[in-house]
Length: 309
Ligand SMILES: [Zn+2]
Image 1 (cartoon, helix red, strand yellow):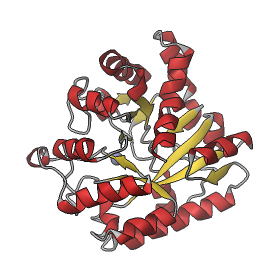
Image 2 (cartoon, protein in one colour; image 1 turned 30 degrees about the vertical axis):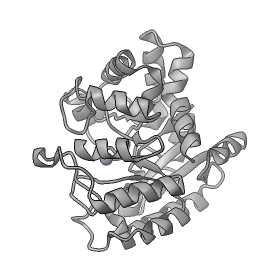
Image 3 (cartoon, rainbow, N blue to C red; image 1 turned 90 degrees about the vertical axis):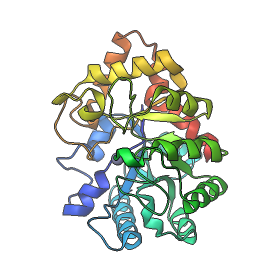
Image 4 (cartoon, rainbow, N blue to C red; image 1 turned 30 degrees about the horizontal axis):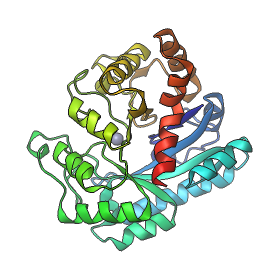
């Protein structure tokens, strides 16, 4: 079973009006069934360089998500709670959960957070690779130590009140620590790996991983080769290496999956969601127990989800 904390499939479908049911992307309904998915975060990724109205664009993407859910109701259902996930699972359906990747869709207005909550959004990646009203991304050296802005602190408080999951992937290290210090609930890094293993700013330092664990959160393993080992091919063994490293450092409970499917290019050994069994096999071969593999693939994510929501 799989609970994946990040994919950009809706961006693809929204962009070229492909069908969710069957497509050439990493995720479609058939691949989800083959991958034994039980829950999937669908990120509404809004690129600020491509829109002047991030709030409107995000709403259109949610419209697209809702349309696809209606068209595929035989196998997927929108959900917001862990009870939804359980109920859908019992009727053989995947739960699709709406998330946002780019806090600028709030356009600096906290009431917009209520709006997106009402539309079913349950997690927000606070920044992508641009500075926004909330804070700074980790893609520029000069941003790294900068913390959240006053509106960012307001967003943290409100997300805690609404029981939404705060996602720090892409956020500056300074912003990460502000989330750790100010959030009263567990937070997640939906698609980030270990910086000691691959020294890129999108990955988390050892201290950050330990703090995330102590907060009760999880980090989703990203399948992008640039965040794994910098090689041409995204290798299963590299994903296992990151998992082994984080396990030795911080234990099993902080590790989850955030594939970044349909947000990443290049050659992937796990070609698409239908091939997720390759990771399961590699983890078992590496000596992880079945219970540990279950925690990595879905139980840890489910734990955080039911704690916060
Ligand atoms: Zn991302």
